[in-house]
Image (cartoon, rainbow, N blue to C red; front, side, top):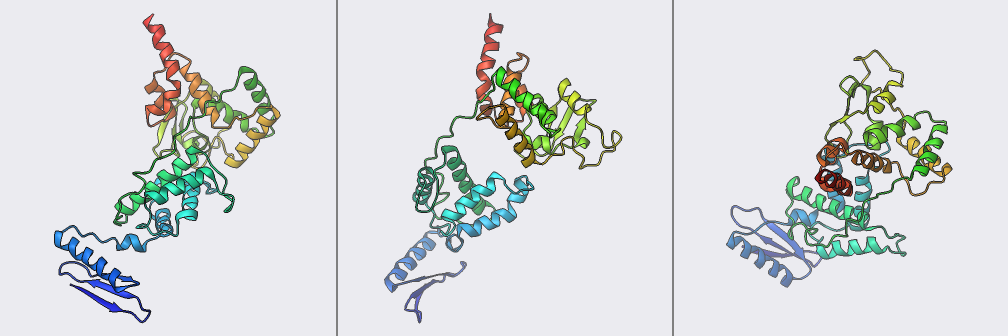
Length: 348
C-alpha cells in the first residue's frame, strides 16, 4: 500500500510497499502529484509489469560516462600516448551538452536538439558547426553509452534507447583524394629531402602495405617475419590483430634498416619506425606544403595504396579486404568500379 509523508520542507514523499518487491519512494511538490505516482506504481505492480526506473533517474550522463571510461573503454579501445583518441572527444562533447541530464530524462527530443545544435553551431556558447559525419559519430557514441547502461550496468531506461528513433545525419562521402603523377613526384621529392630520415621509408611502407598510420608506428620487429613475408599488426582500428602481407618492396624497405639485435631475439619494444605520431604528421605536413600540395593527409596514402592494388587486375574485393583489414565489403565500395572494369575485360 501507499503512504504519504509531508516533509519539513513542505514536499510530499510517497512510498509504495509490496511484499516481494523493494520499497519504491519518490518526493513531490504536492500530495496530488504523489498520489498519482503511487497509483501508477501500484497499477503496474498489480499487472506484473512494474520495472523500477530509479537508477536511471539518479544517474546522470556524466556519471555514466565516468563508468564507461573506467569499465568499458580500457578493454575496447586502443590507447594512444597523447590520449587524443576520437572516442574521448566524442564523450567530452556529449558530457558538455548533455552531462547534467539524468538517463531517464534523455529522450529522442533532447537527442534531436543536440543533433541540430551541433550541426548549426551556436555563437552564444562559442560552438562552431561541425559536419554530418562528426555528429553522426557522436550520436552513435551516445547510443553505445545507453546500451552500456542497459547491458553492463543493469540500468532500466524507461523509454528504451532514445537514439533508436532519432534521425541520424547522413554518413557522408568518404575521401577519395589521389595525387596526380606530377603531384606525387613533387611530394616524393620533398619527402626525400626531409631531415627526418624515417619519413621516406614510412611513406613508402604505407603505400606498399595500405597499413594505417598507427599500425605502422606500433609495428615491432618481433612481429615481422621477412622469410614468410608478413607482418603481424597488433594495434589495429577494430582491435583485432591481422597478418599483413609484405610485397617485395616492403621487404626491401625493412631490410634497409639496421636490426637492433640478431634475428629472433628482438626486444618486444624495438620498432622499425621509432617515430612519434605527432612528429610524423608534422614533417609530412611540411613536406606537402613545400610541394605545394593541398588537401592531402597521411591517411590518404591508404586510399592511394588500395587504389593501386585495385588497378593491378590481380586482386578480388575479398583479397583487398584481407590486405587492408576492412571489416565489411561496404567500406571498399569506392574501389568496385575498378573491379567492374576487370570483370568486363574477362567477359570479352
